[in-house]
Image 1: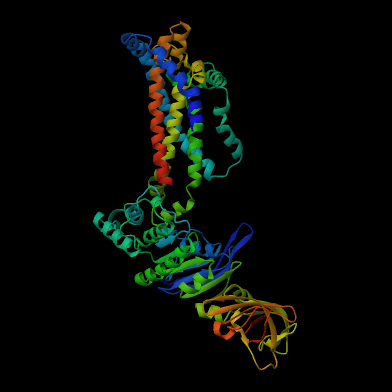
Image 2: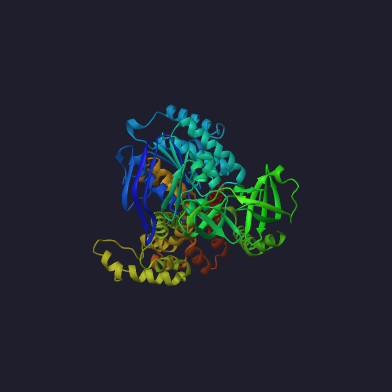
Length: 345
Length: 259
């Protein structure tokens, strides 16, 4: 199901939660809504679900206007951060709920429901646990039940609100892969909210970045990471050194540091430089500066270096381990800036 | 552990066993007569029957009251919240006198009911009114924390799965509240069975008609029939113990689901 959000606005009291948000979600897509807390991402998800209604704007499912339709009418599957399982029902009853409450001819027969529940529990790898109660399950298992319950009604879209937020790191990682697998197996259009950029970049086909009720950028994880369109995205996604300086004649300058900023207008500016975009430069020449390594931390194939320039700027750099194998704290590196994102301040 | 048990015995078990001892001073036939004569049976019937009806009324209205307090904002909410506890705090005799005055045939409410042919004061109906009055906070206060816990996302989950509002209430909300609701009901019932002060003023205390079992104990005591009083006490004690046992079983069941 394609979903179109057109100029949606939503205010809570005097605080605008969504400010003219437009977004197209393609059929079968896995989209992440990423942003800091208070950015409006959960509100947007709830507006899409029909749990919250916008003050202005439209929500379309296919070409049908669903702006003021309730959640049930939209046939959404919603997964809550705190699972929201019915704790007086067994796992199987929980999963069957959406089918059980159907009326008349729309209600599948008992054996059809049982079959569907079995199928879903197998899909989320809880085949044996149908007779348990939610209280007898771990957090990760409960979230799988919630997922199966949401999928039981064959939703036109699956919506997940911080689905892994209440889980510990290892469970979160494995459940992430699981969600990708389930999405690929069912092909259902899926939108999930997260404040964890690693989760969004790893899992989603496309990521929408929200900040203060506005969508800053929508794109594939690679586009978001490599071509941030604004200072917020550059600072929020991935790691970077934030530098406040000035652009003059196509070069960004701050203290003893200067590098190419072609295309940027002259004036005060902010530059974001990713640690791995600080490159070793033997030649000297323009743009080369010295960095004294204060701390060196190995991390997989990469060594992360905390350092200070002669002008007192603190920078973080990352190199391949073998490139700086002999480096000791206190040593000086000659560096230049390979690539920077420069925005007017 | 030892200290708690010692205290428990001192405060609870010794007086209770004294009641048993006193009752066992009589022969079996004397005991049976004292326990199950016509007047005593009527009193038990009134005490337990009125308590059951009062608890049922409180079960319904307590549920609604608790829901309103948890889910809605309204003017003077904290005042209402305080008034709920009043039956806890009010000396029961005060409540009894107030109720008796209100519901007497010449009282504010009683006068309105006379034309309809309804007599409240000095009838079993009066007993039910008094027991309802003192039982309400038990249901409300037992349900409130559970309702607060029942996150609204559970309701949203049910709605998103296509449940109607009625389905959501009947299949999700009420079953989740059931253990706490039963506990509140049982507590209100237990309290109503033992209630004395607030009842005697409005009940009229006519033997075979509006005489409650606790009052019968007092009457026996006033006639220096300690064994007879203890006998009725033993019967009530047994029933009360049975009820508390059931309450605990319900709570254990609720805890298992909530864990």
